[in-house]
Image (cartoon, rainbow, N blue to C red):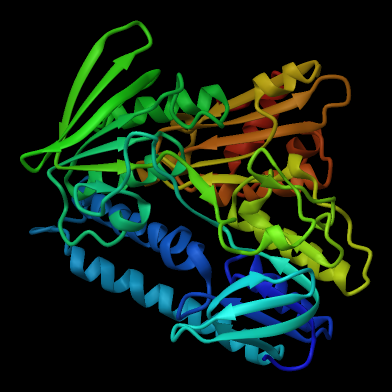
Length: 467
């Protein structure tokens, strides 16, 4: 039996769970976190966002070293040390995990290692590694169990030739040929990593464009950049069969126009989405409702069971770490009796860290028109940017979607070097309901990449200076 009742027990310590715990601790609640792994941080820290971006940084540096002679820096014998890249990646992950543990101590958040499940609304059972079970009473529970890699109905990852994103993070060698199924953020990021590491990469996407959730112009620009890098891209293509024959992955696919494709690779990455972790967490012992594979919650994360909240990848909201974190803060503040404002899901930034990067927030041009807006668009290419020329990173553009009558910025879409950082200006613009005119009147430093945002805003009014 666990200790006395906690104000809050959180199942899962990913970017939703651990952030909720720290915020609840700041607000004076007694908090217990249940985490199945040996270290805190969840998928994002250990098998997702952080290790993936560490490998992407290695790929960026490798490419910069190869290209250095163009900028007067001659490096000989440039080569990838994959083992050292993994060491750096693990060092970053461990440092962050220990940082979370330190923050828990600072805010008096307790945690226990084990697999948690609900045993009714206010009881959490924790099964330890040795099989023992402890029970903890909770006035409130936040379920933050996240998601796991998904398979296809006819194809499952085996960790050998058929990989998911967990497996590929630990590859000891660079495969000569890599086939990536899925051109969402995960697939495109790993394609970008391993292409620069030396793999011959082929990407196959069922929908009609890469990064199908992005603005169509962004998708087209990224596909063009990938092809320039030698990455083979097949969109509107359905994989019908994939199997390992004599150590080689053989894949049969068909395009939308009926053309048959036969593809071969040494490794195949399944980047076909994720599945919410509902199994075994005891939802059947509560009144929690699930619709279309997602837990039903109100604007504060409350489920249909009194005192039980759910956040992150369990919900029908964007499956992004920063969304889960904000939902965790919202739930913690609501439990503490605050009156937090609900999340505006039209203002969620998305970032893809392939090369070139993509950052976006708000409505795409097509979505804005679908919603009935009279739209004005401004675009500025990085080919006309002085700073981009200095960096040798002229691929991509900035695109602003604005509402014609009131000039309010509805969306900002960036593809190019540093896009995942540049998108911060769009986050502030949408939150503050800024107009394109206000962005024009905002002085942007020169020479910078973010000047392109200023120029795109000028483009909304047909007054771009430098293009």
